[in-house]
Amino acid sequence: MTATVTITVDDAQVRALFGRLMEFGENAVVDAGRDIGEYMLRATRARADREAAPDGVPWVPLSPKYAKRKARKRPGAGMLHFDNFMLGSRLAYQTGPDFVDIGTSAKYGATQQFGRGSIPARPWLGASDDDVHELVQILQDHLEAAVSGS
Image (tube, rainbow, N blue to C red):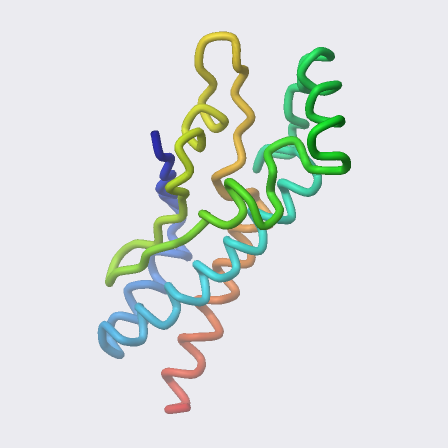
């Protein structure tokens, strides 16, 4: 099972920036999408280090029994193995002329995002308000570069 979350920002400023950027061609938008994707990879990993959802709500703690087992098997590992294993190494983004998707091919990514059975949801994909602010800044920077021809 894989997990992909598409972030739809219904913000007039973002839509206007994308529209203006499209005036400079598809490559301008794809370049901005790549920077957005890289930013979102960093932001997602930073949230995993804090063990919190994009809205800042802390993740549900591991059950005491599983936490004890995990501490024995992988001392110091984060709740969702967000190091070079599991979700961390499989986190990726894809871009196109009108989208940036971020997700994982890890089989339990969707289970962690949405929960399943006795496993509570621990949302890790998505964008915080700070992320949206940064996405706007990235788009503005790309638009300024396109306008100046650099």
